[in-house]
Image (cartoon, helix red, strand yellow):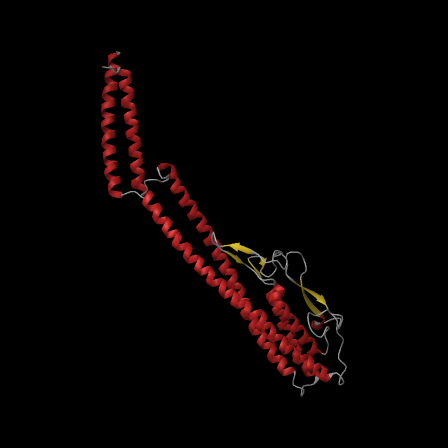
Length: 328
């Protein structure tokens, strides 16, 4: 039979007291926080807890991205809604201007509003969101549409020509990841959305102002001279009428498809958001089962640990006092 020395016995009592103190701290924290595993290392399921916490962090990141992208998509749709109204108004002016009862000066008066509409559309193409140009592609710190000049006239709104920036990256589409398995294109190049409309408005404004635009079809090249009246009056009328077809093309082939695409993006974002919410709820439920403490059980365990700690304090104090007295 092995005899335990007084020194060994004293150490055992101290260790027993320390263990009881740790148990009191453990159950006190469980009662205070409601968690039996505040840190992954506190549980035998540490790996599982760590993986689920990483999943939740990743989901929160995606949810933040989705909220930002939804704002961008809504911003774009609002811009195209305004553009639809502007095209409608430009068509009304073109139909009015094509009336051959109007004099060249009356047509020139209509051109003033057309140039205002043209500038508004170019402004939508150069619109920025949170400091970045939406339709500038990868070159989103620089407006995608720049103002240059036609050969004629030398000054005035009819001389202004908007060109899509040819810098590297301007036509690039940018995409963002919104779930582990899903990415989304964030932008369409500005020339695809606004190019035809701006071309049509410049042709319309110049025709009403009394200037032809070259070439007859396709993107303008900055050329075109003044009409000679009355000889070119019918030519002016024909040029105004041709713009109606171009405005319809811009609406039907550029604006409407883009708005349809934006609607599809918004639905995909909402679907992804719903799926992420479900995944997050499921992950939180699993973590709750692993980490959350049973309140009744934690309180009972704390009470037992406190009782054991007080008992160990009492016994240890008596033993240590006797041991010291033996040396006096």
